[in-house]
Image 1 (cartoon, rainbow, N blue to C red):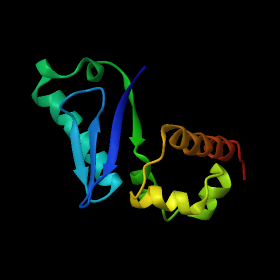
Image 2 (image 1 turned 120 degrees about the vertical axis):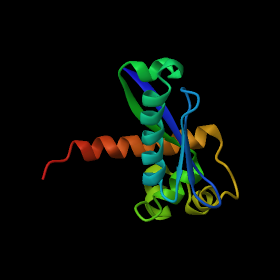
Image 3 (image 1 turned 45 degrees about the vertical axis):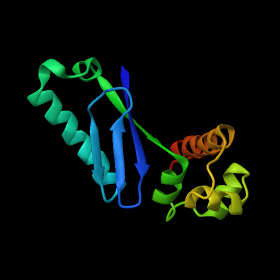
Image 4 (image 1 turned 90 degrees about the vertical axis):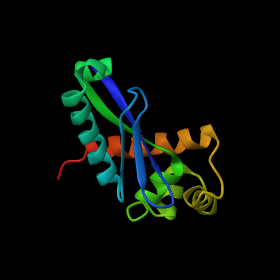
Length: 131
């Protein structure tokens, strides 16, 4: 099954989203959920109204994968992941994380991967929990 990669980014006014590997698929919204829904509507519209121009990936089976830039991720999840929690799971100090969240600095690719790996590890640990 192919992956349709949806990139989500935060602008001054809203969240924008686009399909990285399917041209012409865009969305936006005041929240990440609205941007995701907007992309789903764009996909449905594209498939229904322009079947001849529908990207090949949309003609077969695919799964959606959401990609965030670091600033957008930290902004979206700030109510769930405090900088103290992120410091604990990533090893990156809180002041540096705050710079990433506000856009004062962008993480080097290795730092972004470190954050991603820590979040995936946490997700795997949570998936193994039974209550």
